[in-house]
Figure 1 (cartoon, one colour):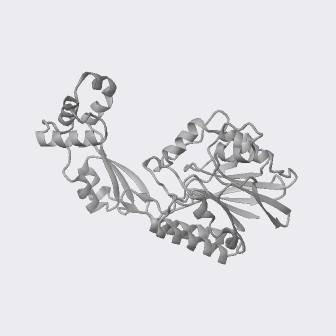
Figure 2 (figure 1 turned 135 degrees about the vertical axis):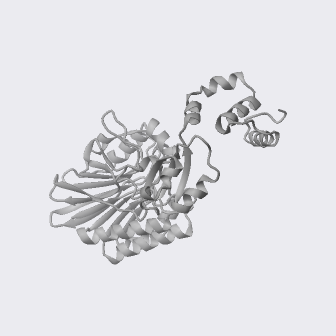
Figure 3 (figure 1 turned 120 degrees about the horizontal axis):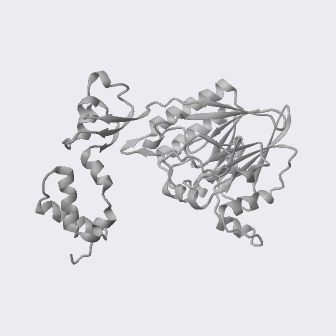
Length: 385
C-alpha cells in the first residue's frame, strides 16, 4: 500500500499583495501527477487545509477541484482540520464525501476517528486526530488530569484501544518535539503556532504505537524523534525564511507490520521564492537577472533611500513582495538600545532622531503631526500630548 502525506495547504493564502490561487492549483496538479506516477492508494492531509477560518470562494473551489480529482482516481483521502480551519466548514458534507472514500475528521467528538483499509498484507488502521486543545479533551474525560496539550493527546490515544498487532497510521496536527529539540519552524506559521511551540509541546514518544505519523502544523519538512514521525511541510514557500527549503511530499510504502519505506518526492513551484541582496543597480543588471517571474524579497544595500524602489524593481521583477535596506544607517539602528533611549527622550525627539538617521535631514512639522496622530490612534502617546 502506498500513501502520500500532505499538510498545511493553506488554500486561499496570499503572499503580500499577490494571490496564490494559481500557484496552489499548479502545485496540486503536480501532486496529482505524482499520485499517478507512484500509483498512490491513499492520501493523508494533515490539517490547515485553508488559510483562514472563513475561506474565500476561490479557496473552497480549489479544494473541491482537488477532492473531485482524488475521487475520480479512486484514491482514498483522509483529512483532518488544523488550527487555521473552521471545524464546521471543513466538516460540511463529510457523510456524503465518505461515500466517495473521502474521510474527514474536523472536530474531536470524544473518540479517535478510525478507518480500516486492506491490502495484500492485511488490515491497516488509519486514525484521524484533528487539532485539539486541552480544554476540548477535558470535556470528554473529566476524570482525567489534563492540563496541557501533551496530556490531552496522550489521554485520547490511551482511550483509543489501538491494536498493537496491526499496522497503525495516525494523521495529526500538533506541535511535536523530539528529544530535547523542537522542530525547525518554517517562518510562515502564525504567531499562535510559535506560542504553542514554546508552551504546548507534545513529546513524539506518545506516538510509539504507530507505524507512521503524518503531522501538520510546521511548514518545514522534517522528521521528529524518528523517521516515521514526520512533518510533510507546506507544499509552497510562504515566507522569506523558507527560501532555502526544498519542498517535497512523502510517499510512504507500507509492507508488513514494521516495514515502512519513505520516499521524499521533490515539488517544483510555478514561481519560486528568492532573496536578492545588493545595490539596486546590480540587481537590475541584465547579466544578473534570472527567473524574473519568481517571488522576490529584495534587500538593498544602497546608502541612500531609492525613490519608488518597489516600482523600479517590479518593472523587472513583477512579483517583488517586499523591500528592505541593509546599510550603515540600518545597522546603526540595530545597535541602538531602544528601551534605554525611550526612557530618556520625548516622542518628538525619538521620531526626529529616527528620521535624521534614515533620511539625513530633519522631519517637517507636517510630517511630525502625522506621526503624532498615528501614535495617538495606536495608543502609543496620550491624547493630550
